[in-house]
Image (cartoon, rainbow, N blue to C red; front, side, top):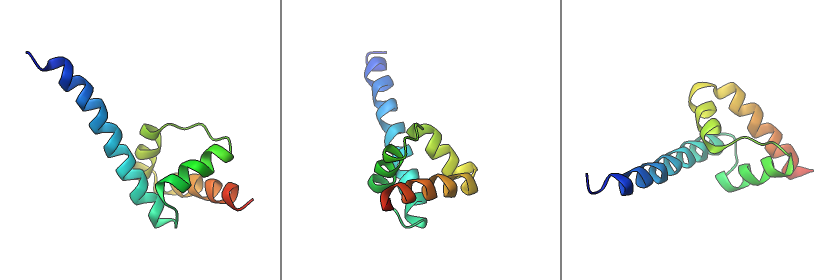
Length: 77
């Protein structure tokens, strides 16, 4: 019981790291790195959080491919 608070905070940190890992792996399939993908999404004014992106990369690869395409177009433009 002494570490419950710390572990709740740690779980949040670990989940964010897992989401970033999944997004990076899926982004590399589409020729982007994680940072370039996120930067492209910011330039394209796409507001989607890391949890949703990670979920798309695992469950909806076609939708993630579209998101990656939008990000890549924003980087090129």
